[in-house]
Image 1 (cartoon, rainbow, N blue to C red):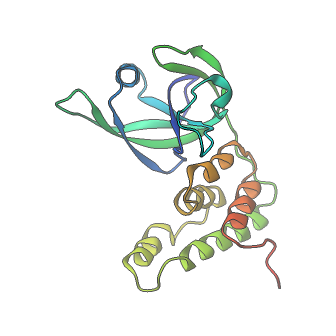
Image 2: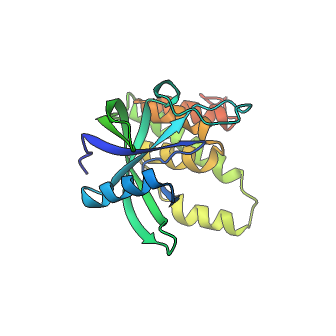
Length: 207
């Protein structure tokens, strides 16, 4: 799917979406109601921009310097309006993007976007790393639990290292701030190495 050259943006702390993932959102602020209306009127794309917020900060600073430059273009898959004027929606991550500038800041942001193109240097290495990531993610689930069975059903047949990196990174790195660096990495091997380190797996594995 071709990604848009510009996209409406919602800024949130500790929140991001990845390719192949779904993100539920509740839209209630007037500026984001306007953003949603713009997305529905055009191509249904929205990006979630991650705010750099220190844990001790009481308020979110939405100035340009505190917005991470990488995101994921998300496609609106469902949108249900509520009686109070808010909307509940499901955003599906489609592809990595870099914010190349701001076409608009008020009442909501619109970013000029460039795609982040994925690269694989050594497919065999990437496949080995991806399998380790899957194995480590699977081993973190209690044996015989419904979660383990669901994991096997959803992810057991995955083979594409890029997809595996996105699925494991998004679902098994619990903090959005830990996941965020993955959105700016073009090399799939770099993503997988980062994930393995975060999951406590050294690569290459000891013989």
